[in-house]
Length: 299
Image (cartoon, rainbow, N blue to C red; front, side, top):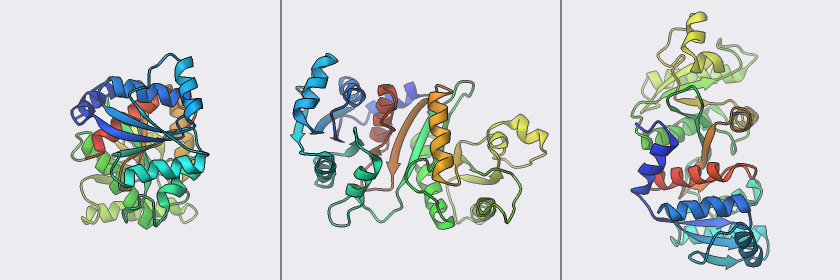
């Protein structure tokens, strides 16, 4: 089982190089990440955006991008449309968000006529390596689904489990995280957690072990779970954390990255191809890790 980003990148290299289409490429962190991924043998790249600005930034940070194809786009909307089109036409195997709002990119992805919809729910899967833990954590959804319903959460779990399987975890433990660990009508997310656990017990959700509701502490800390007398195989041992809404997921993943200095990767799954999607403020290392994750899961 893959337990670090170093192992993840090495595993991804066996599947490369894959072609990535970058939507709005004129960004220092984006270009560094794409360049490092190219040098490592993970990818080939098509950069879509303002060609002059992209070349100028590359020159300023002293990287040579003459091996990359550059597609001119008049604005960010056009850049997203053209990058999506490259993936849709199989000229690229994956899509990457550049210096653009997620909403603009996702509008191009979700277009019924020209987008990358596959009939599945799209969800963002974050993978983190946190100091003090000897494994990778998966968080979802942290960027796409605002207030997921019970049916949405089933699909969010399935998407996250696919990523866990790609990392070699054949039976990941899924914690449905809420503010408290006891079901209450005042917090509908806790009732969803009970139902999701039941569905897993009855075989409707497969390939994983689901438990909840759990508060964050007793989902990831065995000591905290034991202190509260919580008896469940997932308690204190979670591999995947399913969050109740986008606010919770987005704040948690960004706090882990910026406060805890966790290593991070993030991709959107459920589309016709993986979508590398990180915050515009994320480091080039985070973007590089995300590219590696997309390469690993693209098949």
